[in-house]
Amino acid sequence: MPVKYIKKSTTLLSNESSEAREKVASILSRIRQEGDKALLEYSRQLDGFKGGSLKVSKDEIAAAYRALSPEIISDLKFAAERIEKFALLQKESISPVEVQISPGIILGHRIIPVSSCGAYVPGGRYPLPSSALMSIIPARVAGVKRIAACSPPSKATGSIHPAALAAMDIAGATEIYCMGGAQAVAALAFGTESIKPVDMIVGPGNQWVTEAKRQVNGAVGIDFLAGPSEVLIIADGTANPEFIAADILAQSEHDPLARGILITTDEKLAQKVMSAVEKFLRQLKTADVAAKAWENNGEILLVDSSDEAITLANDIAPEHLELAVSAPEKIVDKLINYGSLFIGYWAAEVFGDYISGTNHILPTMKASRYTGGVWVGTFLKISSYQKITKEGAEFLAPAACRLAELEGLFAHRLAAEARNLKTMSI
Image (cartoon, rainbow, N blue to C red):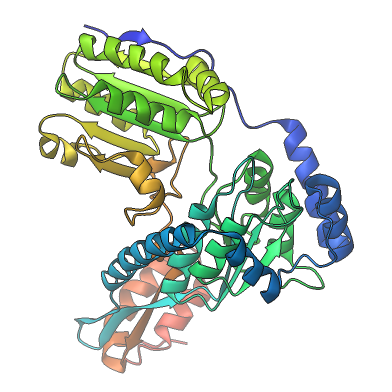
């Protein structure tokens, strides 16, 4: 039978607009031309920055630690240790290569970290120190020498929230700036009198940050364009409906555009999840945002088989994919499009957000069809090389000459033929 919707989303809202494109283009252009003057003006106008220097001092970092409880500092360091451990394991899995592919021809690749990167840490209603850890630690482990982190000022204090600031320091940022929005992306991409440009920019942000990253892509590298958060849960009748409801709401509270989806083979479970969502919303402090996201974008789909669920999941290509089924190992290999996979009833997506050790900066809007999330390899260039002897050149030259002539590139043919002394005709 066709897929049955127990709950269907309304028209999904878009986080793109022509107004945002035009405003961001104007901000980028002004900062590129006017540098610090425009950057400071935008920071005061749009973010309420009240300080004199956007660069955060050592005294401000020390004050941030003093403003936090020892328990919070311990938790941040615990998360940082786990993220670093996994990043180191990932780095060890990438090896230089050198091999003689045929006589006189040696091919290889080197692994080279980018020289500098910008790490954007969102602000918003609450601090997001976890995003600082997720963007900065893999860069440091990769060997990036200059890591310029930034975050907008808190409206309450006019400076970066102490938790985010301490997290940036714990993660290993070499420079920290109190700036946000499109103006921060512009400063990192193009540079100003006081901020050197970087080679790439990573980290999530609002629609202004995302649009700015879209427009500077090419001038600098970016990780990807982040959209609203998504979770898709595949569940059977053995799943715990309250676990599922809580995980859906954990995504929904991010943003009114966030998306929580359940695909199940069990209609009774679907109804129990609906009831549990309503129950939790009555007691949730973030119910204003979560309820809107669930009402507008949440979906529950009933399917006949796990194969149907797999097909749908691969088509949706979610940011987070949870498997709340009795035998998840039977379907893992069939799932190919997701940012991060959470296997088993107890693998809550929230653990990946904060503390398990994998990265939470993940592709959204179906981008997991062609990319994974931020990881240590994001900051590494795999650069090839070749060593070719006279014997190797004479072996390769005839075919290279013919292919060059086929493409009408006669200097290419000359360059190959010049190294083939046996047949040199010019």
